[in-house]
Length: 81
Image (cartoon, rainbow, N blue to C red; front, side, top):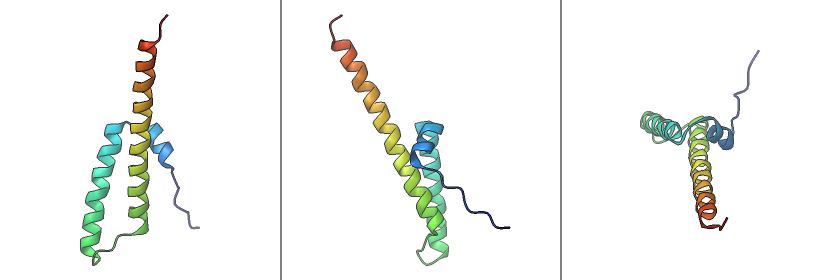
């Protein structure tokens, strides 16, 4: 019986991890990608490429959510009550 890899979306990663955890994951993935590329004439596996793209996108989601939160806070302070 073979099992297919579980696909996780960038949004799921962003919701499940802090920005710092995503950053640590990206750092580990970059290191793994470098090692894999060195061992394979500059080639990386699709799984590493996919994971890098997912974590990079998740980081973007997290940054956007933080920026939106800060904008909302700024608007709420500028609104007369």
